[in-house]
Length: 433
Image 1 (cartoon, rainbow, N blue to C red):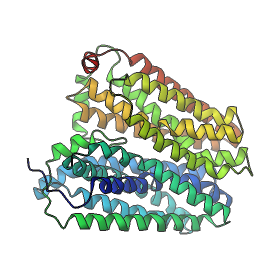
Image 2: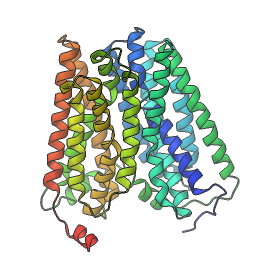
Image 3: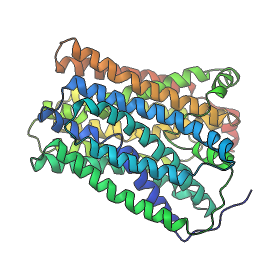
Image 4: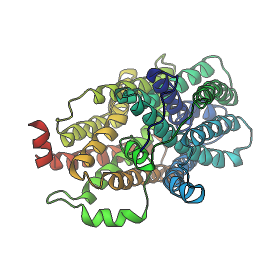
């Protein structure tokens, strides 16, 4: 299998492109709605119940996008006898993210759910295919240690979106202006990324086979779902002697269910509980900073540490963070909520996928795809529960109280499952030796 020639871009530049791409795809494409939601509510653009459906639309779009990303490489290869152009598909996803972000500034509420749905699809495309070409090129330069920078992009994008939303609120601008500001800033980033890719394509590239690409993508947080046909076989063949794959999938799905309400409505809750506090506008950026630092910290932890126990710590930390704003309704409580929910956000996924590769080394790609799909389903189920409580007319305070305690209990249950699964395996003992 041939390896493409070295391009003029340095490994650091490649990692930076990946980080900014992930920042656009995830931090803006998926999570820009969160810091701008309080302004949209204040402007009278929508109700809290309608906001639930917009969040649901985006999560559903991301799930659909992940499925499409798993199918495109195989279909493209059969039709063209060539590997799918990952860098072109990544830029297409990024460009669509910019356009759909700007589209949210349009005063057409009936269109917003569709915009958020397609934004979810675009985010999945940008994330998966960015990861593919970045990891491939870093591997060719023997600089895979820089891959961690790529996934700090989620936190970087969240910080960027939070700061721009805070500026929008402090200047008294409308939500439409905020969407335009976000779209314009990420548009500049995407133009730079496109320029760098075009510069790299001036060299003769010969791509690696799909096996190398899919193996690299298997190491990613939030990686796309793999071929559906192999999932049933994986489920029946990879149960271990103790805690089965089904239980670990359930635990991973509970992580997706447990964090979504906080990650969507944290700034709204903060404005209701501590109105006028100078910390309100910094709650969401703190979440992003915590996610980025948590990602870096997890990458530096020794690989022989027990992933089950590390995951249990992540789940318990998020479980506490989800309800911290309720138990301690103050600026300090919401800051700690941002830190406790944000820091394990990416680390949790990295530890889970590392454990999968230890337990099922020959089935890791299929198992990771299956777990990713379950995580997405967990995310999708959370907003409808919140919306149903809102429509029952019991009041915002009780809705937040019941929803967040349910989410906290789900995370606690998931952490207990991982804790019970944390026991020595022969492969792990061999690694220690």
